[in-house]
Image (cartoon, rainbow, N blue to C red; front, side, top):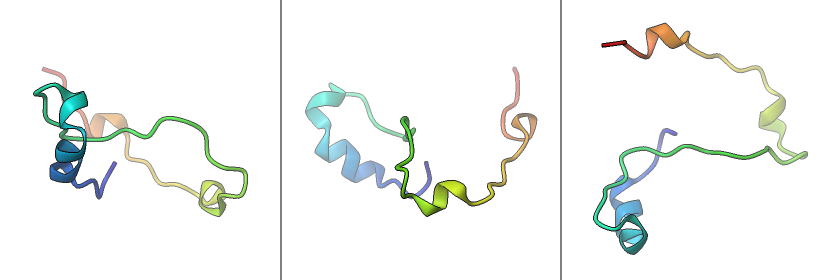
Length: 54
């Protein structure tokens, strides 16, 4: 998820993170039925252009 303030998340959830650091976020769930953005066309990069196998 882009736009996440990792410093703010680390500060707000320091107890829950137990010494770990947040570096990224993943949204999980369903969109709201009234969310107009959910119906807009999306563009996605092919997985091979994002990940490299080592």
